[in-house]
Amino acid sequence: MKPASIPLKDIARFSADAQVWRSFGRFIAVQNGALLAVPDVLVSGDFTAARDGCPVSWHEVLTAVDTPISANSRGLSPEQLADSAPLVAALFPPWGWAQDAIALCAGGRAVARVISPDGVIFCWVPDQD
Image 1 (cartoon, one colour):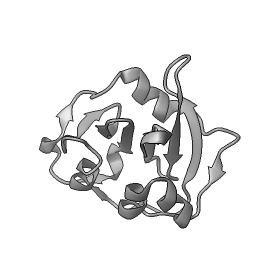
Image 2 (image 1 turned 90 degrees about the horizontal axis):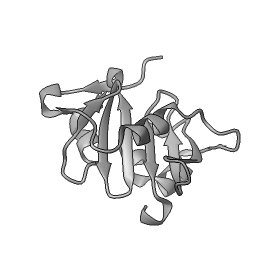
Image 3 (image 1 turned 180 degrees about the horizontal axis):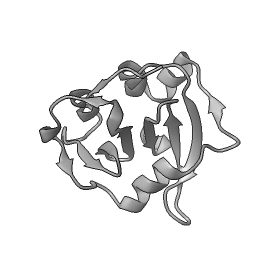
């Protein structure tokens, strides 16, 4: 089953300055303490509005998208997703998401991460959610 197309303008809602970036096969939006990474095959819209490059450390993005889901992750119901990440739940299909925590750098503070079955990833610093 192919996931629904995600409009680029919806991804821009996650960005502090409405800017969406394209790198590592993903469209990326960031704001203070949060990062959204959406696989490019899921996105629709005017791609000329996205900037090539990475708005944060490439290491942080690759860690967020390449770290396997933790054995201690928990599956989220649509209600739990809405509690953890309200904008994610409002803009993306709310079924099948899992939540874990990862450190984006060695010795760094853990961030919360939710992952959809089709590879959408949202990370945030828990006390800034």
